[in-house]
Length: 128
Image (cartoon, rainbow, N blue to C red):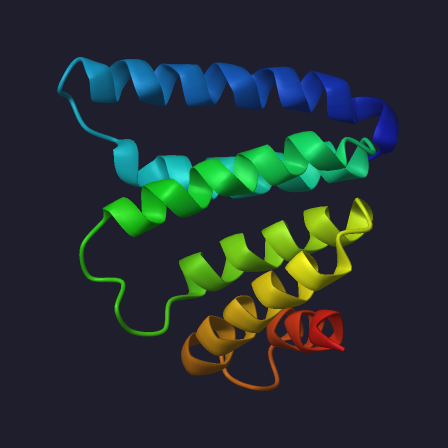
C-alpha cells in the first residue's frame, strides 16, 4: 500500500472497527475480529509515523486477546500483537519496553509459527 493511500485506508479501518463494535454491543458477536483489526491498524499508524497511536491500538488488541479464555499456550495472535507493540515502542525510543514486548512476542511466535517464520525473526531482532 502506498503511503498516500494510508489515510483513506485508515478511515475505512475505523469504519470497520466501529461496525464490529456496534455488532458486539447489539449482542450479535464479531468481537473475536477486533484484536486483528487493532493490530493491523497499529501497523498503519506506524507507517504514518504515529507511534503513540500505534501503541494505543496494540494495547486494545492485547486487552481483547487477554479477555478471551484459551490463550495459555503459544498464540500467533498474541505474538503478532506483542510484535506490533514492540515496533510501536521502539519507534518511540522506549527501548526497554520494546524489548520486553518483543520477548513476549518471540515466545508466542516461536511456539506457534516456528523459529524460522519472518515474524519470529523480527521479534528476535527486536529483543537485541
